[in-house]
Image 1 (cartoon, one colour):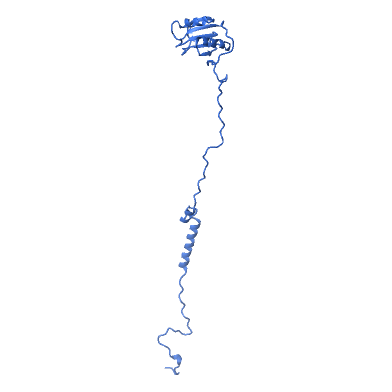
Image 2 (cartoon, helix red, strand yellow):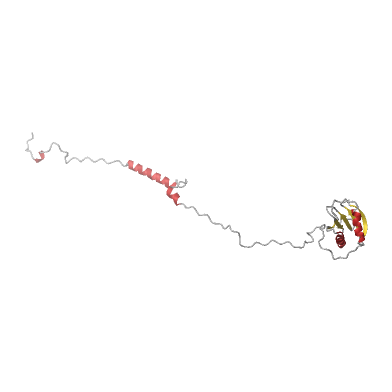
Length: 204
């Protein structure tokens, strides 16, 4: 027991949380911030990867792919040109001298005078007996001069033909063709005689 009388400061409750004035109150523990910072850093790294790397790899989100529009194909004009093409040259009704071979039968009679003094050879090209003599009689009876009468020894002929070896004999060959009713008249420089009549198969 003390010698001093009790006062109001001596009445202290038994159960109290009060501390003396000379002691500091205990500091409240602060929560740790490192988990929050770690999560934020990871999220930032993922965002940068998605923004910078994924577009280069060709990864496009659904929203981006839906906005891509396919260009419409251009319509090409397939219709033919309206400009008329140059007409093809028409063939002339008269054959040119260069295009016509020398052995083509003459279609128009020549206006040159007929010289019946030119010797005419008559050959049997059909194999019919007496055919060359009969034709030679017709030629001689019209006033022509005969040179040779016999069988044809050249290439086989499919029809009757009259050969002449120069353009000067064309009129004479046409006159013989009219007399003997032979339409095939051929110029052939290889023939040694000026006028040759070959009575071929079917000659009447």
